[in-house]
Image 1 (cartoon, chains in turn brown, orange):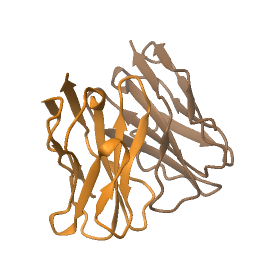
Image 2 (spheres, helix red, strand yellow; image 1 turned 120 degrees about the horizontal axis):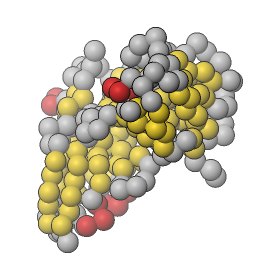
Image 3 (cartoon, chains in turn cyan, brown; image 1 turned 180 degrees about the vertical axis):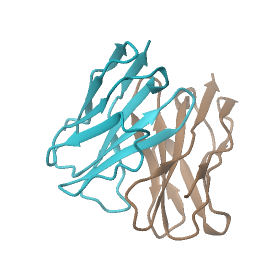
Image 4 (cartoon, helix red, strand yellow; image 1 turned 180 degrees about the horizontal axis):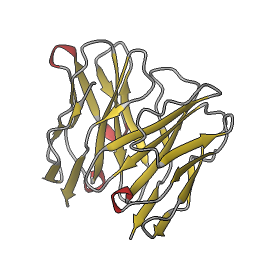
Length: 115
Length: 113
């Protein structure tokens, strides 16, 4: 079946503008994660959605970052008033109904460049 | 907060050489352990995982990893690497009761033909 998809694949924006990144998880996957990966760094957790439960926002770096997910469908990550340090690859992953041993299925990422 | 350390950031090998990539974590309780791989131009994908049982886990493409609880380690091994193993490798750890894994910084492996 189809994997996790993300759009756009690349986004170039000017400092101060808002951007919206989209993630379509694998159908039936209740868990959805957003990560940020800066050049040469590991994956930095941003936010976690599990079904209709309240999301875990503990990884969001500032109040400029927010994310939404409707039920078990698509999710959008919004970055307001972008800064140059926001430049990174933003990865989305989904996972089946959560058990600790479940793996994550990753999308291709959105490469964000803030000029 | 727990941490995951991958000590080798860049590894360069010739084909047929043996590989061992280190992964250590800081949490003392029950853990689930993962190795993910990202080939050039591709998505991150699961290489292997440890959930319970036999601490020696075998994954795809001839990779294996051994969970050594006393050493808080989950090192990745392959006896003979190929050029096609050139990729970025990430270790990840989930602690009991958490569904959010912590990832290591990653190891870049280059295999020369």
